[in-house]
Image 1 (cartoon, rainbow, N blue to C red):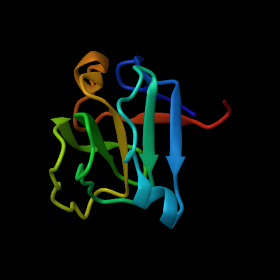
Image 2 (cartoon, one colour):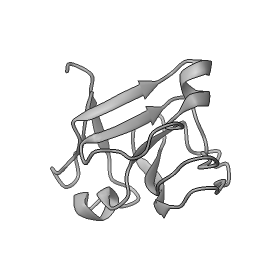
Image 3 (cartoon, helix red, strand yellow):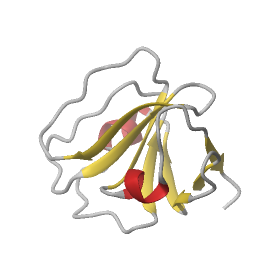
Image 4 (cartoon, rainbow, N blue to C red):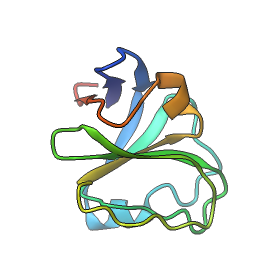
Length: 116
């Protein structure tokens, strides 16, 4: 799947996996050593995340049901737990730095393209 910020026109990732089962949401990014620049994980449903047991920092984008950005976590380091936000229905985990590189801000809308 690919993800693009509709508000800026910039690509966020072209190799985004979807975690939409109990097992894939629970596993998340655990066991990986890093994410390549185009990789990521879209976890749905989810209203918060943890990085316990991870080996690298990630950017996390909290989205509402219409894929609008409602919360951002820049470079969330390993062994942290985010607060749960009732407005968030899914989260996008991408390599640290992608939020800044894509110009993503709260209120922007992301386009999720599952054709690839």
